Amino acid sequence: MALTRIVIDTDPGVDDAVAILLALASPELEVLGITCVAGNVDLEKTTLNAQRLVALAGRSDVPVFRGCAEPLAGPTGTAAEVHGFDGLGDLEWPTPRVEVNELGAVEFLYRELTRGRVTIVAIGPLTNLATLLVEYPDAADLVERVVIMGGASFHGNVTAAAEFNIWADPEAAAIVFNASWRIDVMPLDLTHQAFLTDANLEELRSWGTEVGQRVADMLEPYAAFHLEWYQNRDLIMHDAMAVYEVIDPTAIVKSGVEVEIETDGLFSRGATHFSRSHRHATSTTRVGTFVDNDRFVDLLKSRLATLRSPN
Ligand code: RIB
Ligand code: CA
Image (cartoon, rainbow, N blue to C red; front, side, top):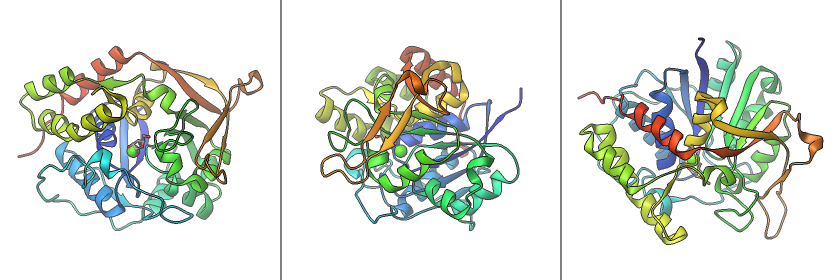
């Protein structure tokens, strides 16, 4: 079966880290490259974290690219309190051996689009993707589809209305969701169904691998954040849902929607308004509605267990 060619657009971030490692460990996917964007932490840190993660996975063959350093309308904010000061749980890391590719993220994305069909897995603010559409208007016709972690229809996680990836750059999100390309979006409504527990982290540690140890350790600040915000330590795997959907599209139930992005609201800036009317049943935009967490966690563990870090 042909591999699915993907580019991961990301702001690592510890849940991004799990998503990236899952992708690098999955034989269904060809990861063409990782494009970084400012989000959870600033661009220099998200880019360094992507370098660290490809090295951890023994996949320094996967190139890392710098993208946009701030949102279209100017700086909004980071999530360092969730992911640690360095964005990856504040562990000690070796210096990556492979440099960041000198090509810009947007130029890389477009180059790959001209070489064949690409699925873009977008798990951070959408600044790079919006810039791609502005600089290369035909990009939307060249993309296989865009799978996005973002948005919320029941409650945000930055404000009552807005989820972080959309809140961080609403103007970019509006450009991305108004484009003609196919979108599958995994909002908080879905991602809150997928989580790891402390028992899962102990199992990762029991493997005795660098990946198992580091994933468990980097998720510790994230667990503390969840305990404070949600009164339990279940670690929500937001970004991994976008990768999981590409690995196995049948694993996540989806339905047609129309999505409008709020850019001007006093209290609702960054809100995602989902219309689930029957009129949108055949829309090219679909929203994830259900995932079986046990099935997801089993696949995640089986894939991460295959990763071996170089000495
Ligand atoms: O709201 C969850 C999203 O915001 C995830 O992508 C997480 O990494 C943060 O960026
Ligand atoms: Ca992210």
